[in-house]
Image (cartoon, rainbow, N blue to C red; front, side):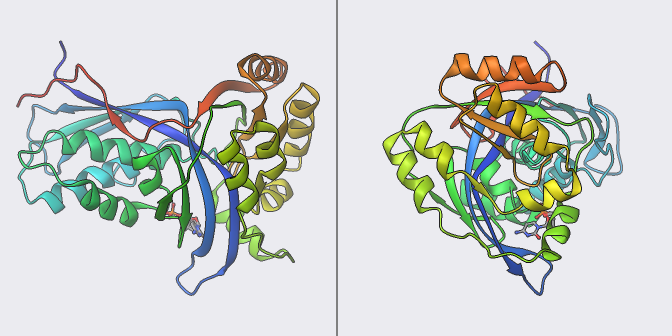
Length: 303
Ligand code: C5P
């Protein structure tokens, strides 16, 4: 068995994303309903076995567009965890096996960071508590705390202040990925130039989730960032229309985009929508809710 520890990093969609005005610190107050999806990446941490000036001796990703240096959020997560733990850790290498699209509005980078926290924490002599991990996660990025916990939650503040939301049933999604990602800061900046009213109430989403009613959830889905993403990528309108024609209950831009997420009545419908859109785009199906970052069984670690 290889000597590495692996953790699964889950994608998210926003069932509701209400964006308040720009704050003085450059962030926006959000009211977000996150749902974790089965779509995932794997983070693998291995002892480097060689001396290194920094904790992370190297980082590799199997997808283009992922920084492989200290700017990668997974790298930052490892360093932040080591620092907070006070333990002296042996150098590691990090491999990211990306199943979540890069810059796709599905918190792929945040999920890698959350999975890195979980994985490396499991190797500590005195693992940190979940609350401390959440603290570190919030410093790393607005979506990192949610990807640590998963399931269905309401996020306020920058999105990092979380409360669980009751959700019944399983929801089936088809996802259409774009070749080129969108920059989250650019999408927020575009939104700031638009004349709009923030849509902060998520009551309709909460009611639909309580009733396990996919039709009601489809009608209630809302994303304030969608107008900005569509303005930067007008062709996403066609993607959404095509998915809805193929039988989706409703299509929306996921987070800051450009991934389009289609809520479907059941697994067969999701397959059908993914297959029809798959002629033109890379697609996947996924279910939600899913767990947060999880260390995989069978990981071994000895240094
Ligand atoms: O927190 P994170 O680093 O993931 O945020 C990336 C960018 O997204 C921020 O620099 C900011 O431009 C934008 N953002 C925002 N308001 C939020 C979350 C993110 O404006 N609540």
